[in-house]
Length: 289
Image (cartoon, rainbow, N blue to C red; front, side, top):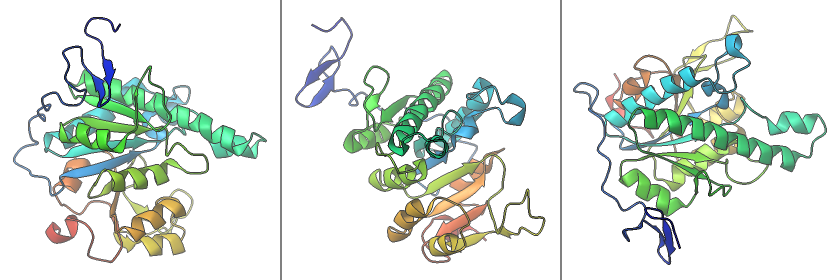
């Protein structure tokens, strides 16, 4: 017998003690809009690296920095304030990297599974920061850990988004040998997102080379998925880029700072846009001047 106020299971999925299905409660209203701006997107997927939750070189001991995570939550809250449905995929490289462990002799599949669990830790930290801002959030993991988060079920994730909740997709794809970039591409397509937003902490977009090591590196405002693959520009890994290319999923790469996320969502040209065909595939192409 479930505890009072707890959830029960039915053939239609989890229900509350009152008998309503989990996910069927009244929609959570979005926060106030950012000024008078309106988003050109209705649903996006935000891809964050695990390092985005850390404190940088000066805080190397902190895999998850609460202050930095709170700052990210504020940016995501701004996106919700525009009335945009927001799904998030977060990496786990600030805690564990499966490929690095494999290079040291660990079985690759085992290392990747540990890395997937690291993404769940990051997702829970981000959920906490978002909920501190009053933003209703659900963590859904491709690896079932029911004590702390929901299992990822595509239709339930869509339902959460329709109800105004932020959905954080953790656990990668649930399979070894696939990166969280691939998870971001897959979830964006499954959840009917209109674009992937690749938020960076270091760079303003895509460059022809690493700006830290090559002073001749040039900023690239727009390119195709195929160009990114052929030139090995590391926007995403090749598997993820191919999936985006095959399904004409645009990718916006920009620095996660100031009001950049608002500018991207409202159609301004910020950072780099990766499209299947130059000038097509994203709302920004129609509004940017």
